Amino acid sequence: MGTQRSLQLSRLVLPASLLLLLFYGAGTAHCSLVHGNTRDRHSLLDFKEAITDDPTGALHSWNNSIHHCMWLGVDCSARHPGRVTVLNLQRLNLTGPITPSLGNLTFLRELCLDSNHLSGQLPPLNRLRKLEALLLGRNLLQGNILDALTALTNCSKLEWLSLSSNMLVGSIPRNIGSLSNLLYLSFSNNNLTGTIPPTFSNITHLEYVGLADNQLEGSIPEELGQLPNMSWVELNVNRLSGRVPATLFNLSNLQFLDLSVNMLSGALLSDDADIAGTLPALRWLSLGTNKLEGHIPESLGNASELEWVVLSSNYLTGQIPSGLGKLHKLRYLNLDKNKLEARKSANNLCGTMPSTIGALKNLENLHLGGNNFVGTIPYSIGNLAKLTSLNLSQNQFDGW
Image (tube, rainbow, N blue to C red; front, side, top):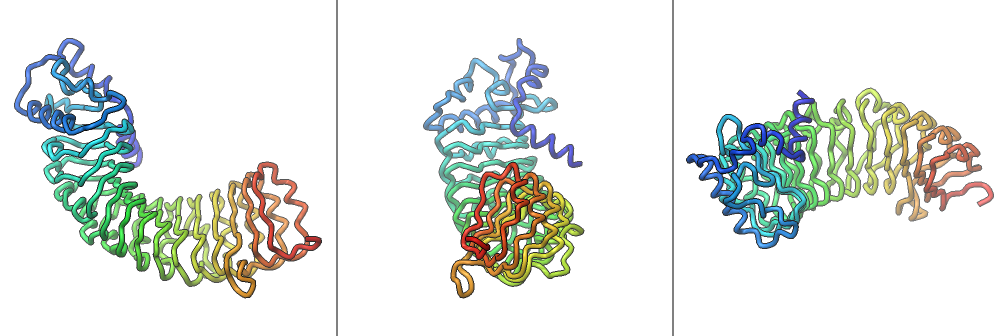
C-alpha cells in the first residue's frame, strides 16, 4: 500500500508524455473532438486566458494546432478519451487566478499548481469527486480557510492537500475530519488562527500534518497522537500552550516532531519514559523555545535513529544523560541557553559534560551554551571530526 502511494506521489512531478504518445500516437494530434474533451478543452483555455503572466512560455503549446491532451502539464484518461485526469503546472511562475472552469474537469485526479504566483480565492471544486491530490502551496491565494475547504466539498477521495505558504486566514473548521482519506495535509505558513480541531481523529490514514508558522492557539489535541500511521508532525512557530500530549510519544511510525517556538509547558517527559520503545523511528525532535520543565529522559539515548535534537530555550534541569553518546547518527544537538532562573540567561542543566559526547562521530553542531556546567571540557570532544559549530559559552568550566 505504501509503495502504491509513493508511486502516486511520483506522478505529481514526473512528465506523462510517454504515456500520451503511446495512447494518442504521433499522427493523431488532430483527432476529432467528442463532447467530453470539448468541455475539458474549453475549461483549460479559460484558465489560460486568465493567466496574466507566463514568463517561461509554458502555455504556448495550449493552442488549436495540438490536441489538448498533448499540452504541457496535461494528462488524459486512456479509457475516456479527451478527459483530463492530471493538470501539473508546478514551478512555472504563472500569474493570475485559479478559474472556476477547472471545476468542470470532472475526471481530474491531480491538480498541481504549487510554486507559482496564483492569487485570489480558491474557486468551487466540489464537482471533482475523483480528485486525489490538490497541491496549491507557495502561491498568493487569499480568503478564509473555511471557504477554501468548503470549495472541496464532495472531494472525499482526496489524499494529498497542500495550501501552505499562501495568505489564508481564519480557523481550521471542525469538518476537516470529513476529508477522511487524507494522507498528507499542509496548511503551514499562512495566517490561520483559532485552535486545532480534535476532528483530525477522523482522518485515520493521515501520515503528515503541517500547521507550522501560523497563529494557532490552545492546546495540541490528544487525538493527533491516536493516528497510527502518523510519521510527520510539524506545529512549530504558533501560540500553542498546555502540555505536550503523551499520546504523541506513542506513535511508533513517527519520524519528525517539531513543536518548537510555542508556549508549551509542563514536564518534557516522565523520567521513566521509554522513547526508544515507543518512538523507534524518530529522527528529528525539536521542542526548543517553549516552557518545558523536568529532566532529559535517559531513554533518549536509546532512540538510535535520532539525527537532530533541539531542546534549547526551556526550563530543563539536571544533567545531560550519558546515554546520548550512543546516538551515532546524531548530527545536531542544541541544549542552549534561555532566559531562566536567577542568571536570566541559562537553562538549569548542570554537572559535568559527559565524556560520551565524544562518541557522537557524526555530530556537526553542538550547542550547550548558557547552562551551569562545571569541571573540565572532556578531551573526547576532539574526536568529533565532523564538528563545524560548537558553543560552550556562559558555563562554569574550569579555566574559563
